[in-house]
Image (cartoon, one colour):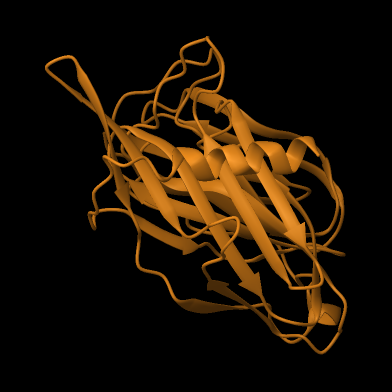
Length: 274
């Protein structure tokens, strides 16, 4: 009951009379990441300053089961409300986000690009080679792909609503789920790149083992350690939030990220642009 009560509250926030429409926001699923038993699809947005709430409802294709929606490591991890409701019968998921729902002040999401949630699927049909996502609109309660911005001028607070254009997209999974394990080590180029403030780093492991992924500056000094643990074989994606090991935001500039796994080591370049 608590989940549905809070989701209804999101719908109330998203129909404030003062809202007007714009067209500066973007939404798109990121690259599907395959593991041995799951497929993770990051939901990524590009937004302006002051994003205070997100509402979206998506329908997914047959042959997969949406197991959960996760928010760890995303740009909205600090938001007060991060909610999801999965309707397996209709193959639909509602995701609702609000930055502040308590007396403690939480900042709106600053302008940038990157993931705000992750859809974790199980592949039920081994012949499935893609997952299709479609943005839809529901009634009673009302939900649609909507971003809400908080703006203040002359002591007056207003809210601006934007509805990003997004229809349908299919995400390739390769030749069926049975062949999802990679045959060799690989380190992909980070995305987005340039980025602000978060970026995704994907890598492939043909076998399980110890993995180290770290970020370095142009002087070769380690800025942060992103992974230092044993991981299973498969495709993995991690998120760097543009902070150093002390939790401080790093300056704009060129950085390098390096993976070491077994005898495999590779380094790639990326750019933080504020």
